[in-house]
Figure 1 (cartoon, helix red, strand yellow):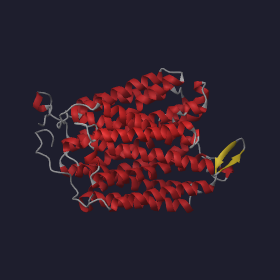
Figure 2 (cartoon, one colour):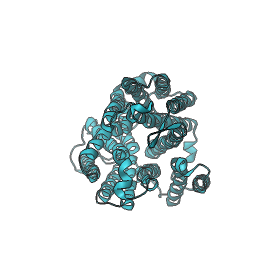
Figure 3 (cartoon, helix red, strand yellow):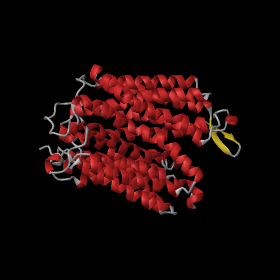
Length: 482
Protein backbone atom coordinates (compact mmCIF):
# COMPACT_ATOMS: atom_id res chain seq x y z
CA UNK A 1 0.00 0.00 0.00
CA UNK A 2 1.23 3.45 -0.85
CA UNK A 3 1.68 5.74 2.05
CA UNK A 4 2.28 9.47 2.05
CA UNK A 5 3.02 11.79 4.90
CA UNK A 6 -0.15 13.64 4.04
CA UNK A 7 -2.09 10.44 4.62
CA UNK A 8 -0.52 10.04 8.06
CA UNK A 9 -1.60 13.41 9.32
CA UNK A 10 1.71 15.09 8.48
CA UNK A 11 2.31 18.01 6.14
CA UNK A 12 1.51 17.80 2.46
CA UNK A 13 4.17 16.00 0.40
CA UNK A 14 6.81 18.20 -1.18
CA UNK A 15 6.66 19.00 -4.92
CA UNK A 16 8.48 16.56 -7.16
CA UNK A 17 11.26 18.97 -8.14
CA UNK A 18 12.19 19.48 -4.50
CA UNK A 19 12.30 15.73 -3.83
CA UNK A 20 14.58 15.28 -6.84
CA UNK A 21 16.79 18.18 -5.76
CA UNK A 22 17.23 16.82 -2.23
CA UNK A 23 18.03 13.31 -3.46
CA UNK A 24 20.48 14.68 -6.04
CA UNK A 25 22.20 16.77 -3.37
CA UNK A 26 22.54 13.65 -1.22
CA UNK A 27 24.01 11.78 -4.19
CA UNK A 28 26.54 14.55 -4.87
CA UNK A 29 27.54 14.59 -1.22
CA UNK A 30 28.09 10.83 -1.29
CA UNK A 31 30.20 11.08 -4.46
CA UNK A 32 32.21 13.90 -2.86
CA UNK A 33 33.42 11.39 -0.27
CA UNK A 34 35.25 9.51 -3.04
CA UNK A 35 37.51 12.48 -3.88
CA UNK A 36 37.62 14.07 -0.43
CA UNK A 37 41.18 13.05 0.50
CA UNK A 38 42.79 13.09 -2.95
CA UNK A 39 44.40 16.53 -2.39
CA UNK A 40 46.22 15.24 0.72
CA UNK A 41 46.92 11.71 -0.50
CA UNK A 42 50.63 12.35 -1.11
CA UNK A 43 50.98 13.98 2.33
CA UNK A 44 49.27 11.24 4.34
CA UNK A 45 52.47 9.29 5.18
CA UNK A 46 53.92 12.38 6.85
CA UNK A 47 50.64 13.49 8.44
CA UNK A 48 49.93 10.06 9.93
CA UNK A 49 53.52 8.91 10.49
CA UNK A 50 52.88 5.76 8.45
CA UNK A 51 54.22 4.11 5.31
CA UNK A 52 52.85 4.97 1.88
CA UNK A 53 51.59 1.41 1.49
CA UNK A 54 49.59 1.68 4.72
CA UNK A 55 48.14 5.12 3.98
CA UNK A 56 46.88 3.84 0.61
CA UNK A 57 44.19 2.07 2.66
CA UNK A 58 42.60 5.48 3.28
CA UNK A 59 41.57 5.39 -0.40
CA UNK A 60 41.11 1.63 -0.82
CA UNK A 61 38.85 1.12 2.20
CA UNK A 62 36.29 3.63 0.89
CA UNK A 63 36.04 1.73 -2.38
CA UNK A 64 35.66 -1.57 -0.57
CA UNK A 65 32.97 -0.39 1.83
CA UNK A 66 31.00 1.31 -0.95
CA UNK A 67 31.01 -1.86 -3.04
CA UNK A 68 29.94 -4.07 -0.14
CA UNK A 69 27.30 -1.80 1.38
CA UNK A 70 25.54 -0.71 -1.84
CA UNK A 71 23.78 -4.01 -2.70
CA UNK A 72 23.02 -4.67 0.98
CA UNK A 73 21.50 -1.22 1.38
CA UNK A 74 19.42 -1.79 -1.73
CA UNK A 75 17.92 -4.99 -0.34
CA UNK A 76 17.23 -3.37 3.03
CA UNK A 77 15.60 -0.43 1.24
CA UNK A 78 13.19 -2.75 -0.54
CA UNK A 79 12.36 -4.46 2.76
CA UNK A 80 12.16 -1.75 5.44
CA UNK A 81 11.79 1.43 3.39
CA UNK A 82 14.19 3.29 1.14
CA UNK A 83 14.00 6.64 2.94
CA UNK A 84 14.74 4.93 6.24
CA UNK A 85 17.89 3.32 4.81
CA UNK A 86 18.99 6.61 3.22
CA UNK A 87 18.74 8.26 6.63
CA UNK A 88 20.69 5.40 8.21
CA UNK A 89 23.46 5.82 5.62
CA UNK A 90 23.58 9.55 6.33
CA UNK A 91 23.98 8.84 10.03
CA UNK A 92 26.83 6.45 9.19
CA UNK A 93 28.39 9.17 7.01
CA UNK A 94 28.24 11.72 9.83
CA UNK A 95 29.66 9.28 12.39
CA UNK A 96 32.47 8.28 10.04
CA UNK A 97 33.30 11.91 9.25
CA UNK A 98 33.47 12.86 12.93
CA UNK A 99 35.71 9.86 13.69
CA UNK A 100 38.05 10.90 10.85
CA UNK A 101 37.98 14.56 11.90
CA UNK A 102 39.03 13.67 15.44
CA UNK A 103 41.73 11.22 14.34
CA UNK A 104 45.45 11.77 14.02
CA UNK A 105 46.19 8.07 13.59
CA UNK A 106 45.97 5.82 10.55
CA UNK A 107 43.57 3.39 12.25
CA UNK A 108 41.02 6.04 13.13
CA UNK A 109 41.16 7.56 9.67
CA UNK A 110 40.66 4.18 8.00
CA UNK A 111 37.61 3.46 10.18
CA UNK A 112 36.16 6.88 9.39
CA UNK A 113 36.77 6.51 5.67
CA UNK A 114 35.19 3.04 5.64
CA UNK A 115 32.02 4.49 7.16
CA UNK A 116 32.07 7.40 4.72
CA UNK A 117 32.23 4.98 1.78
CA UNK A 118 28.88 3.48 2.74
CA UNK A 119 27.18 6.72 1.71
CA UNK A 120 27.46 5.86 -1.99
CA UNK A 121 24.56 3.45 -1.46
CA UNK A 122 22.26 6.49 -1.36
CA UNK A 123 22.50 6.91 -5.14
CA UNK A 124 20.70 3.69 -6.22
CA UNK A 125 18.28 4.15 -3.31
CA UNK A 126 17.53 7.67 -4.51
CA UNK A 127 16.82 6.35 -7.99
CA UNK A 128 14.42 3.80 -6.52
CA UNK A 129 12.62 6.45 -4.46
CA UNK A 130 12.13 8.45 -7.64
CA UNK A 131 10.48 5.47 -9.28
CA UNK A 132 8.06 5.25 -6.38
CA UNK A 133 6.99 8.88 -6.26
CA UNK A 134 7.42 10.46 -9.69
CA UNK A 135 5.15 10.31 -12.70
CA UNK A 136 6.54 8.44 -15.67
CA UNK A 137 7.17 11.49 -17.85
CA UNK A 138 9.38 13.00 -15.13
CA UNK A 139 11.19 9.83 -14.20
CA UNK A 140 13.85 9.58 -16.93
CA UNK A 141 15.17 13.12 -16.37
CA UNK A 142 15.26 12.67 -12.61
CA UNK A 143 17.12 9.37 -12.90
CA UNK A 144 19.59 10.93 -15.33
CA UNK A 145 20.28 13.70 -12.82
CA UNK A 146 20.70 11.24 -9.95
CA UNK A 147 23.06 9.09 -11.99
CA UNK A 148 25.07 12.19 -12.93
CA UNK A 149 25.75 12.95 -9.28
CA UNK A 150 28.54 10.35 -9.35
CA UNK A 151 30.49 12.62 -11.68
CA UNK A 152 29.20 15.95 -10.39
CA UNK A 153 30.05 15.30 -6.75
CA UNK A 154 33.57 14.16 -7.52
CA UNK A 155 34.30 16.89 -10.06
CA UNK A 156 32.96 19.76 -7.96
CA UNK A 157 34.33 18.38 -4.72
CA UNK A 158 37.94 18.07 -5.87
CA UNK A 159 38.74 21.81 -6.10
CA UNK A 160 36.87 22.45 -2.85
CA UNK A 161 38.98 19.80 -1.12
CA UNK A 162 42.13 21.20 -2.70
CA UNK A 163 41.38 24.73 -1.46
CA UNK A 164 40.71 23.51 2.07
CA UNK A 165 43.78 21.27 2.12
CA UNK A 166 46.09 24.02 0.84
CA UNK A 167 44.79 26.78 3.09
CA UNK A 168 43.77 25.09 6.33
CA UNK A 169 43.97 22.07 8.61
CA UNK A 170 43.26 18.81 6.78
CA UNK A 171 40.82 17.81 9.53
CA UNK A 172 38.49 20.52 8.18
CA UNK A 173 37.80 18.24 5.18
CA UNK A 174 36.05 15.79 7.46
CA UNK A 175 34.18 18.43 9.44
CA UNK A 176 32.83 19.64 6.10
CA UNK A 177 31.78 16.07 5.28
CA UNK A 178 30.02 15.75 8.65
CA UNK A 179 28.17 19.04 8.04
CA UNK A 180 27.06 17.86 4.60
CA UNK A 181 25.75 14.62 6.07
CA UNK A 182 23.80 16.43 8.79
CA UNK A 183 22.28 18.93 6.34
CA UNK A 184 21.29 16.10 4.01
CA UNK A 185 19.63 14.18 6.85
CA UNK A 186 17.49 17.18 7.79
CA UNK A 187 16.50 17.76 4.15
CA UNK A 188 15.57 14.10 3.63
CA UNK A 189 13.42 14.11 6.79
CA UNK A 190 11.62 17.30 5.74
CA UNK A 191 11.21 16.66 2.02
CA UNK A 192 11.49 13.01 0.94
CA UNK A 193 8.25 11.04 1.40
CA UNK A 194 8.05 7.79 3.33
CA UNK A 195 8.86 4.79 1.14
CA UNK A 196 5.73 3.38 -0.44
CA UNK A 197 6.68 -0.07 -1.69
CA UNK A 198 7.98 -2.83 0.57
CA UNK A 199 9.14 -6.38 -0.07
CA UNK A 200 8.13 -8.71 2.77
CA UNK A 201 10.55 -11.31 4.01
CA UNK A 202 13.53 -11.86 6.28
CA UNK A 203 16.92 -10.30 5.73
CA UNK A 204 19.52 -12.75 4.44
CA UNK A 205 22.35 -12.25 6.96
CA UNK A 206 24.36 -15.21 5.68
CA UNK A 207 24.08 -13.86 2.15
CA UNK A 208 25.19 -10.40 3.30
CA UNK A 209 28.27 -11.78 5.07
CA UNK A 210 29.14 -14.00 2.12
CA UNK A 211 28.80 -11.14 -0.36
CA UNK A 212 30.91 -8.86 1.84
CA UNK A 213 33.69 -11.44 2.21
CA UNK A 214 33.72 -12.42 -1.45
CA UNK A 215 33.65 -8.87 -2.79
CA UNK A 216 36.28 -7.71 -0.33
CA UNK A 217 38.64 -10.46 -1.45
CA UNK A 218 38.19 -9.80 -5.17
CA UNK A 219 38.28 -6.01 -4.92
CA UNK A 220 41.23 -6.13 -2.56
CA UNK A 221 43.21 -8.20 -5.06
CA UNK A 222 42.25 -5.88 -7.92
CA UNK A 223 42.93 -2.62 -6.10
CA UNK A 224 46.17 -3.68 -4.39
CA UNK A 225 47.57 -6.20 -6.86
CA UNK A 226 49.74 -3.66 -8.64
CA UNK A 227 51.43 -2.71 -5.39
CA UNK A 228 51.61 -6.17 -3.81
CA UNK A 229 52.53 -7.93 -7.04
CA UNK A 230 49.97 -9.83 -9.11
CA UNK A 231 51.50 -13.21 -8.29
CA UNK A 232 52.22 -12.43 -4.64
CA UNK A 233 50.65 -14.68 -1.96
CA UNK A 234 48.50 -11.83 -0.64
CA UNK A 235 47.01 -11.04 -4.05
CA UNK A 236 46.42 -14.69 -4.97
CA UNK A 237 44.86 -15.57 -1.62
CA UNK A 238 42.58 -12.53 -1.72
CA UNK A 239 41.55 -12.95 -5.35
CA UNK A 240 41.12 -16.73 -5.50
CA UNK A 241 39.57 -16.83 -2.04
CA UNK A 242 37.13 -14.05 -2.95
CA UNK A 243 36.07 -15.82 -6.14
CA UNK A 244 35.60 -19.10 -4.25
CA UNK A 245 33.46 -17.40 -1.62
CA UNK A 246 31.34 -15.70 -4.31
CA UNK A 247 30.77 -19.02 -6.08
CA UNK A 248 29.62 -20.59 -2.82
CA UNK A 249 27.53 -17.51 -2.11
CA UNK A 250 25.81 -17.81 -5.49
CA UNK A 251 25.06 -21.49 -4.88
CA UNK A 252 23.44 -20.60 -1.54
CA UNK A 253 21.52 -17.64 -2.98
CA UNK A 254 19.77 -19.90 -5.46
CA UNK A 255 18.61 -22.11 -2.58
CA UNK A 256 17.73 -19.44 0.00
CA UNK A 257 14.20 -18.04 0.42
CA UNK A 258 14.26 -14.23 0.52
CA UNK A 259 17.84 -14.22 -0.81
CA UNK A 260 19.87 -11.02 -0.61
CA UNK A 261 20.15 -10.96 -4.42
CA UNK A 262 17.63 -12.73 -6.64
CA UNK A 263 20.13 -14.29 -9.04
CA UNK A 264 17.36 -15.59 -11.26
CA UNK A 265 16.25 -12.02 -11.91
CA UNK A 266 19.89 -10.92 -12.25
CA UNK A 267 20.39 -13.64 -14.87
CA UNK A 268 17.60 -12.33 -17.09
CA UNK A 269 19.08 -11.26 -20.39
CA UNK A 270 18.27 -7.52 -20.10
CA UNK A 271 19.58 -7.31 -16.52
CA UNK A 272 22.68 -9.42 -17.16
CA UNK A 273 23.71 -7.57 -20.31
CA UNK A 274 23.07 -4.18 -18.72
CA UNK A 275 25.24 -5.11 -15.75
CA UNK A 276 28.04 -6.43 -17.97
CA UNK A 277 27.87 -3.27 -20.06
CA UNK A 278 27.99 -1.26 -16.83
CA UNK A 279 31.28 -2.91 -15.83
CA UNK A 280 32.83 -1.90 -19.15
CA UNK A 281 31.49 1.65 -18.97
CA UNK A 282 32.67 2.02 -15.37
CA UNK A 283 36.14 1.06 -16.60
CA UNK A 284 35.98 3.57 -19.46
CA UNK A 285 34.86 6.35 -17.10
CA UNK A 286 37.53 5.77 -14.47
CA UNK A 287 40.36 5.41 -16.98
CA UNK A 288 39.99 9.13 -17.68
CA UNK A 289 39.94 9.90 -13.95
CA UNK A 290 43.38 8.32 -13.66
CA UNK A 291 45.04 9.50 -16.87
CA UNK A 292 43.86 13.10 -17.32
CA UNK A 293 44.78 14.43 -13.84
CA UNK A 294 48.28 12.99 -14.16
CA UNK A 295 48.81 14.57 -17.57
CA UNK A 296 47.63 17.91 -16.23
CA UNK A 297 49.74 17.82 -13.06
CA UNK A 298 53.00 16.17 -14.14
CA UNK A 299 55.87 18.66 -14.71
CA UNK A 300 56.03 19.98 -18.26
CA UNK A 301 59.77 19.31 -18.27
CA UNK A 302 59.08 15.57 -18.06
CA UNK A 303 57.62 15.60 -21.56
CA UNK A 304 54.47 13.86 -20.34
CA UNK A 305 52.68 16.56 -18.36
CA UNK A 306 51.36 20.09 -18.50
CA UNK A 307 52.63 21.36 -15.14
CA UNK A 308 49.35 22.55 -13.60
CA UNK A 309 48.73 22.82 -9.87
CA UNK A 310 46.15 20.59 -8.20
CA UNK A 311 43.58 23.40 -8.08
CA UNK A 312 44.20 24.34 -11.72
CA UNK A 313 43.87 20.72 -12.81
CA UNK A 314 40.66 20.40 -10.78
CA UNK A 315 39.17 23.40 -12.56
CA UNK A 316 39.97 21.82 -15.93
CA UNK A 317 38.21 18.62 -14.86
CA UNK A 318 35.10 20.28 -13.36
CA UNK A 319 33.24 20.56 -16.71
CA UNK A 320 32.83 16.77 -16.86
CA UNK A 321 30.53 16.85 -13.85
CA UNK A 322 28.69 19.94 -15.05
CA UNK A 323 28.12 18.40 -18.48
CA UNK A 324 26.76 15.22 -16.89
CA UNK A 325 24.28 17.33 -14.94
CA UNK A 326 23.28 19.41 -17.96
CA UNK A 327 22.76 16.23 -19.99
CA UNK A 328 19.93 15.12 -17.68
CA UNK A 329 17.00 16.81 -19.49
CA UNK A 330 18.44 15.90 -22.90
CA UNK A 331 18.87 12.29 -21.81
CA UNK A 332 15.22 12.19 -20.73
CA UNK A 333 14.06 13.51 -24.10
CA UNK A 334 16.27 11.11 -26.04
CA UNK A 335 15.01 8.23 -23.89
CA UNK A 336 11.40 9.06 -24.79
CA UNK A 337 12.29 9.14 -28.49
CA UNK A 338 14.79 6.31 -28.89
CA UNK A 339 14.70 4.27 -25.69
CA UNK A 340 17.29 3.56 -23.02
CA UNK A 341 19.20 0.95 -25.02
CA UNK A 342 20.04 3.44 -27.78
CA UNK A 343 21.01 5.92 -25.08
CA UNK A 344 23.53 3.46 -23.62
CA UNK A 345 25.00 2.56 -27.02
CA UNK A 346 25.30 6.22 -28.00
CA UNK A 347 26.96 7.15 -24.71
CA UNK A 348 29.53 4.38 -25.10
CA UNK A 349 30.36 5.40 -28.69
CA UNK A 350 30.79 9.04 -27.64
CA UNK A 351 33.35 7.87 -25.06
CA UNK A 352 35.16 5.89 -27.77
CA UNK A 353 35.39 9.09 -29.83
CA UNK A 354 36.82 11.00 -26.86
CA UNK A 355 39.58 8.46 -26.31
CA UNK A 356 40.42 8.28 -30.02
CA UNK A 357 40.82 12.07 -29.92
CA UNK A 358 42.98 11.87 -26.79
CA UNK A 359 45.17 9.19 -28.34
CA UNK A 360 46.42 11.75 -30.84
CA UNK A 361 45.81 15.03 -29.02
CA UNK A 362 46.74 15.39 -25.32
CA UNK A 363 49.61 17.87 -25.25
CA UNK A 364 47.57 21.04 -24.61
CA UNK A 365 45.22 21.96 -21.77
CA UNK A 366 42.36 22.71 -24.17
CA UNK A 367 42.68 19.23 -25.65
CA UNK A 368 42.27 17.56 -22.25
CA UNK A 369 39.40 19.92 -21.45
CA UNK A 370 37.60 19.06 -24.70
CA UNK A 371 38.13 15.31 -24.33
CA UNK A 372 36.90 15.43 -20.74
CA UNK A 373 33.76 17.29 -21.80
CA UNK A 374 33.07 14.71 -24.52
CA UNK A 375 33.46 11.91 -21.97
CA UNK A 376 31.03 13.79 -19.72
CA UNK A 377 28.47 13.69 -22.53
CA UNK A 378 28.98 9.96 -23.02
CA UNK A 379 28.85 9.11 -19.33
CA UNK A 380 25.80 11.34 -18.91
CA UNK A 381 23.97 9.36 -21.58
CA UNK A 382 25.16 5.94 -20.44
CA UNK A 383 24.65 6.39 -16.72
CA UNK A 384 21.15 7.75 -17.36
CA UNK A 385 20.26 4.68 -19.41
CA UNK A 386 21.45 1.95 -17.03
CA UNK A 387 18.88 2.40 -14.21
CA UNK A 388 16.09 2.71 -16.77
CA UNK A 389 17.10 -0.56 -18.42
CA UNK A 390 17.25 -2.26 -15.04
CA UNK A 391 13.83 -0.94 -14.00
CA UNK A 392 12.29 -2.14 -17.27
CA UNK A 393 13.34 -5.66 -16.39
CA UNK A 394 12.62 -6.07 -12.66
CA UNK A 395 9.48 -5.81 -10.51
CA UNK A 396 8.98 -2.50 -8.72
CA UNK A 397 9.40 -4.20 -5.34
CA UNK A 398 13.00 -5.16 -6.28
CA UNK A 399 14.07 -1.83 -7.75
CA UNK A 400 16.44 -0.81 -4.96
CA UNK A 401 18.21 -4.18 -4.81
CA UNK A 402 18.55 -4.35 -8.60
CA UNK A 403 19.89 -0.80 -8.86
CA UNK A 404 22.26 -1.54 -5.99
CA UNK A 405 23.64 -4.52 -7.89
CA UNK A 406 24.04 -2.38 -11.01
CA UNK A 407 25.96 0.23 -9.02
CA UNK A 408 28.17 -2.57 -7.76
CA UNK A 409 28.93 -3.57 -11.34
CA UNK A 410 29.99 -0.02 -12.15
CA UNK A 411 32.19 -0.01 -9.06
CA UNK A 412 33.77 -3.26 -10.19
CA UNK A 413 34.61 -1.60 -13.51
CA UNK A 414 36.20 1.40 -11.80
CA UNK A 415 38.22 -0.92 -9.54
CA UNK A 416 39.57 -2.86 -12.49
CA UNK A 417 40.40 0.43 -14.26
CA UNK A 418 42.24 1.75 -11.22
CA UNK A 419 44.38 -1.39 -11.06
CA UNK A 420 44.99 -1.94 -14.77
CA UNK A 421 45.57 1.69 -15.81
CA UNK A 422 47.75 2.17 -12.75
CA UNK A 423 49.79 -0.89 -13.75
CA UNK A 424 50.12 0.34 -17.34
CA UNK A 425 51.34 3.79 -16.28
CA UNK A 426 53.74 2.23 -13.78
CA UNK A 427 55.15 -0.14 -16.43
CA UNK A 428 55.52 2.49 -19.15
CA UNK A 429 57.40 5.01 -17.04
CA UNK A 430 60.75 6.76 -16.94
CA UNK A 431 63.00 8.39 -14.34
CA UNK A 432 62.55 12.11 -13.82
CA UNK A 433 64.73 13.64 -11.13
CA UNK A 434 64.16 11.62 -7.98
CA UNK A 435 60.78 10.35 -9.19
CA UNK A 436 59.41 8.03 -11.87
CA UNK A 437 56.73 9.40 -14.20
CA UNK A 438 54.57 7.78 -16.89
CA UNK A 439 55.66 8.13 -20.50
CA UNK A 440 53.57 9.42 -23.38
CA UNK A 441 53.33 5.85 -24.67
CA UNK A 442 51.84 4.78 -21.34
CA UNK A 443 49.10 7.39 -21.61
CA UNK A 444 48.35 6.34 -25.19
CA UNK A 445 47.92 2.73 -24.04
CA UNK A 446 45.61 3.95 -21.25
CA UNK A 447 43.48 5.80 -23.81
CA UNK A 448 43.37 2.72 -26.05
CA UNK A 449 42.17 0.59 -23.12
CA UNK A 450 39.50 3.18 -22.26
CA UNK A 451 38.28 3.20 -25.86
CA UNK A 452 38.24 -0.61 -25.97
CA UNK A 453 36.20 -0.81 -22.77
CA UNK A 454 33.67 1.72 -24.09
CA UNK A 455 33.40 -0.23 -27.34
CA UNK A 456 32.76 -3.45 -25.39
CA UNK A 457 30.02 -1.61 -23.48
CA UNK A 458 28.38 -0.56 -26.76
CA UNK A 459 28.57 -4.08 -28.25
CA UNK A 460 27.03 -5.65 -25.15
CA UNK A 461 24.24 -3.05 -25.18
CA UNK A 462 23.41 -3.99 -28.78
CA UNK A 463 22.16 -7.36 -27.53
CA UNK A 464 19.89 -5.93 -24.82
CA UNK A 465 16.30 -6.59 -25.93
CA UNK A 466 14.65 -3.44 -27.25
CA UNK A 467 11.94 -2.07 -24.99
CA UNK A 468 9.82 1.02 -24.71
CA UNK A 469 11.27 4.13 -23.14
CA UNK A 470 9.22 4.19 -19.96
CA UNK A 471 9.22 1.93 -16.94
CA UNK A 472 6.36 -0.36 -16.05
CA UNK A 473 3.14 1.46 -15.13
CA UNK A 474 2.56 2.20 -11.47
CA UNK A 475 -0.68 2.70 -9.58
CA UNK A 476 -1.98 6.24 -9.53
CA UNK A 477 -0.25 8.38 -6.97
CA UNK A 478 -1.91 9.88 -3.95
CA UNK A 479 -2.56 13.55 -3.61
CA UNK A 480 0.65 15.44 -2.99
CA UNK A 481 2.91 13.31 -5.21
CA UNK A 482 2.01 15.15 -8.40
